[in-house]
Image (cartoon, rainbow, N blue to C red; front, side, top):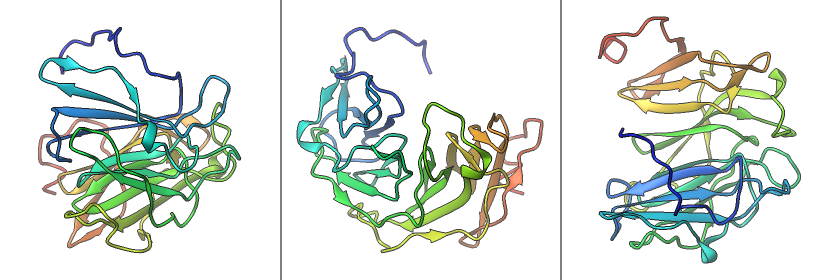
Length: 252
């Protein structure tokens, strides 16, 4: 990572917060440009959830100004969603809309070579509404981790009873990006600390979950992980308090 710099020519078309972001490059999509970033939904300055999707392409000479994807707005306004790019597609999962309720909605679309988006399709709904969840990919399995359920007060810390510890999984087709399964499966092992507004990543052979807010509505630096063994995730375990040598977790 190089030095951070201001990007004065890259002001977004509409100010927002609680939006989702994802990116695509030649490892995740067929592109005629180097890479592209997408900003999805969010809340505008009046507090209204948005259907907006903005994109900014990058090429060898640098950046291109953020542009509204006018023909690719979300079917429904959403903020606090989880999003990820894989297999030439973008997936937008959960969030909340004008009713402030955590949503089960799942949308996905394919990316054109120039970085614009095709029309959004509706995917299998989550078993329960989730906002501010984390999403990651384990092979061709999409994982939605934790999040907030019920009525969402976006500007307030969640009560511990509103935080979810469940992990939902569904299979994707690596060839088309479409959903291979028709329904989500809830993994048998839940997070040790139900949480929202956190990060999750599948690294090596483990699902690693860190940060966010959890019981007592406190900010968390705590990390936990679950290892994938014989095609199934084991129980979540607290990350040790000191850094580990490379390979000491994944090879345990």
